[in-house]
Image (tube, rainbow, N blue to C red; front, side):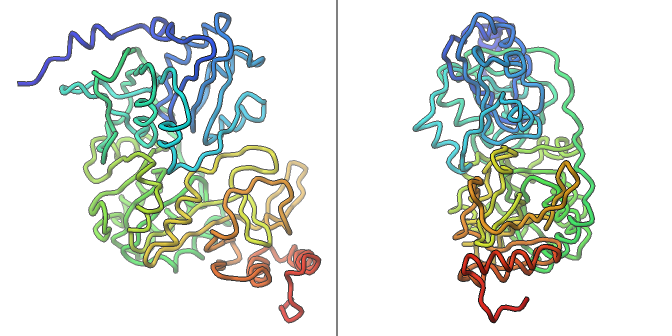
Length: 446
């Protein structure tokens, strides 16, 4: 006979306005991540703007609008922070309405356990099940460690969230919840991945020969990793696995093509593993109550010691630019915050240590600015740019002109390799810059 949680549920049920009344000036609030955004609570908290000062809110990969950020340009009342910017949060950063928190994702839980204080966590969850549990859904990667450390836990029931299977920490019990909020929500946007460009496809085709049957994939955020997934779905590869921070529609394509079986994985055998998910409604429907895929906290998914246990682990991430020393800028353009460190460094380290593993950083060789001027994404040397991945950790670099392996190479060898995959129009100038920095040998071919 099951225990009846009805009376406890009713005792904790509040309107959004009643729930956010617990927030005090100076508090730290957490909205957790992506679909975990508490839409009704955010709206109700924003209405309290004139009563509150210095309320600080953290989020991650949030779609718009975040009402507390948009209602207070003065930031006297609310200050919004993100530890990995979505395109929406990037626009907030451009307006000075969002501050980035540098974070290596496998340390996410530890940051909250040892260093960060949470006065109130507000998180969207699925409806409670018969056992008294609310599911964190595709927010599982970050939600539980934050909720554990919060003084007050408020859950917002979102009727559209998929209920996911998990390795651990995918749920929270009603006994750990202080308040429950209900209400109607708009359906999630049906986010379709952008069509791969010709450049994306060329890069994907260069990477494809390095992937073997039975490999396990991590695909990062961006058009190039998605293009790789689409190219693989049309290839002859088979019995691929999934161990990825972000589950995107590329993995759904791999599954639908019969390539994604997870049969060859040494750990989590037969299961695709992910931390969070952002994509189409078809993707969410695939993840819903699917025993073939499991959500885990990022402290597990992104931990290099876990990743290295997976044979033939292939990590594919993108970047903004690279210099001739092999340093990678993947989260900002100059001082402009674009995304975040995320799991790039985690997977660089883990995949490089895997038996047969490979870690790729990908980019187009050029970009065009707002004035229509073409620039090389390979720069002589960063000067003030934010470095995401150090040169000591870079493995494979890929552009539409090829793939090079930088592991164990000296400075002049690196310069030679990197220039070989630069756009031809910029190679002579890059050689001159390498000569100035004394990292070019006379014997190198021009």
